[in-house]
Length: 262
Image 1 (cartoon, one colour):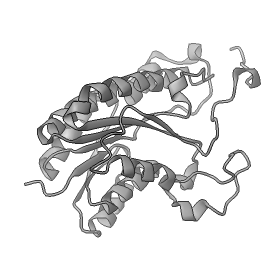
Image 2 (cartoon, rainbow, N blue to C red; image 1 turned 180 degrees about the vertical axis):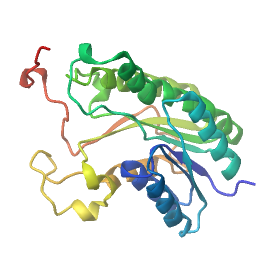
Image 3 (cartoon, one colour; image 1 turned 90 degrees about the vertical axis):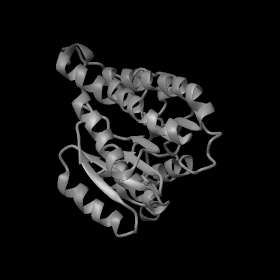
Image 4 (spheres, rainbow, N blue to C red; image 1 turned 45 degrees about the vertical axis):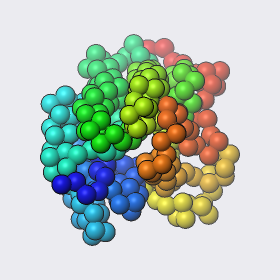
């Protein structure tokens, strides 16, 4: 019998997903971690979370593959008793800067599956569990200014997937609001490297000259917003696209970008 609410967090062995898992565990959620290659990190985190007194499992799954998505949901629900919160943190990103015409079809499909269609599949699979409870929280991840559908040179496919997810977020939120299910999108700013797992206290005395806030962002900056949205009575906050960026616009205007021809 399910005694606590359960949160499934994709891509949660490291980075923002890890900090989110620790935050929700501290709020009393049982946690289903997900990883692709980072098994050791996931197992270490699982032990850390279990030491706080909540249940935690770690499930290997590739969120670009439908069969893995289904197995992730089924194993999480069967072991922990359901799924009340879904945090779609995982999302593939190709760091190499190149024009859309230089992408392979396989790369295009990979980015679309991992950032749009895979997220939609996951949402579709967890909704029946939320419907039975009459309560649920779904979180999507975007990028700064995603709600404005900006041009993002050298990131055309990734940007298309995430801006498509903006519309889906708002549509699903409107459809599910009457059932007690909220759907929101979190758009982190330029939070880099180890800072993704740090607390605000660990970065608040550091300097970031690019940030209007003056300090770098941390994983806690993002996770604390997710934690608030997952509270029992945060049901009036839905369909929102929330930038957590310290005031930074991470996408430079086209006039400041030099587009090279292949």
